[in-house]
Image (cartoon, rainbow, N blue to C red):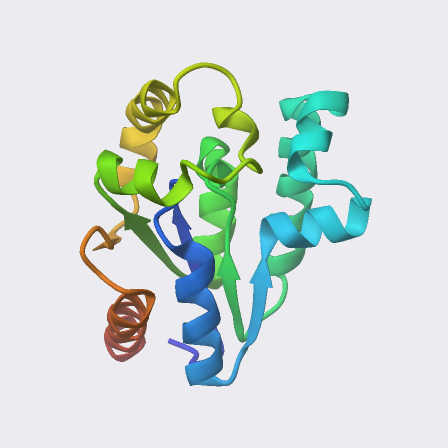
Length: 175
């Protein structure tokens, strides 16, 4: 495996993708890309604004275009949006050019991490705990299909980064 391949972190919101990816990028001296932040910067709107004004399908189209762009590059550490796995082609593209690692956490941990975050458009309606459980259930198979998994429930971002780097290095040796 080319040691310049991307490292892509996927997983549900609140699992630590951004915090972990920043640490991995710093440690490996790579460029860090947060997909949601990139879309917000390029559109000059928040993800919530995009969802409310253009709808989720429009956001998913922007996300898809960014996946294609990032998959054409190398030596990146990418924190993908939580729903990037909804489009199977996104995962296929990321797998073709990098190592994809899924971060996950217990629902109670996710709720604790995101309950005061008002920038989560999919949690704006109804009870957050119920929404988290419903969304997790609807995406369980998609996240579960990712071969590399890291449970961050009891991990700091630094420990999660250690594990992601270990997975990447093992994949580089075997692949």
